[in-house]
Length: 558
Image (cartoon, rainbow, N blue to C red):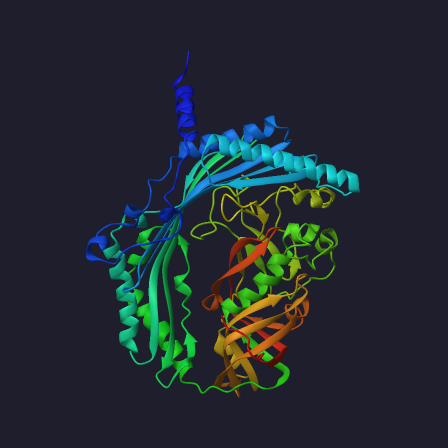
């Protein structure tokens, strides 16, 4: 006799066996008309009906079952759907899109295989699973023939099941576009009214809604619903006589979060935005002076600029796949090796001012209940007062430290740092939400610059590290020259740094909590490259004797 569960499963399989065709206009971004009639509708009206959670779970189970039947020692799959919307200020058109996809990862004789696709049928996902096994078998045979070492045993993890939703009081996809336009227009118009002859900018409201199902041959099966987004405001000050000379708006309160439309209903937007515009107007009034020199100068980094340096160097250097050499032919290696010697080192690797933590808890956009390997994330300290105490680990990379943990009488623990940017991406390792801890005592940017005889305040900068992360350069787009404690001009310059030296010997002060700013770091890992976005925040930082040279001719500030 068939049970209700059997009937439901068969019904879902029958549905999954029918190809689901997404209209081409919906799979790619759809430009929504700006007519009054169109603005009365919500973004959801321009998208196909969302697929059911049960369909995704059925496909996920089918994929891991097919991989196991084909001979995989282990398999996991991520399958899901993502909807996106962006509502800019008029007269620009809103955008909406909907995509679906899956990725099947298998392991055979210590070697990975991977296949992905977007056709949401049982035939498609089971075929992909079998193809992944075939690829893994061939790669394993090649490794054995050439005598290559394969990966260690996967770190064990508990079996997890369940469902989780990130907070969302008001679904932005159900809000009439007119309501979104009113908020975006109010933000943009208010800033324009404050300094109509100086400020050029626009706003938008952007959201991503995602359903992601994870399943593995271990028996895990999870369903997660994410709602991530918020308001954005781009803008710059300019004058009619020189429209190319701009100072860009950068407001710390405009980062994305895990929440719904309720985040844009805060009553203090206008006052907050005016404060930010006033700051860039003051900077805009400074004269522009090209820097044509080379030397060593004291540098004060604004929080986001310092976050960019630490995130692109130290945070990436802690990635287990870089440490193991898995990324050697892709994103690069790490200078924090060998890990057991780094962890047991008698002296700290960095300044005692530097403490780095990883935390994927809400309201961060990195918040999840389970990472992309089915691991429950937990916050941890990676660098404690300059000393490396933890690496970012996945099931593949964690066993390299098993002996070290056993030697110190500590259990080997995964912290939930497996990342797949979409279900069709293979999971990689990363510190998804990194924070440099601020000073506990009063320390502002003015405190760092008031006694500066000649130096610079880097308000907007980004790091370009070498593949091994041992050194790099820092480009800039807004730099204030400081002479005898006073801002005298704006300029552009480039910085050179050796990572350990900059963050150990040259780091002399860290700002307090009021100077903390976030930035989104866009990196690429794997072969073929896949995008990995990581949110990093840091306070301002004061460094001495930084190598400074003239801005390279033709360099871009984008």
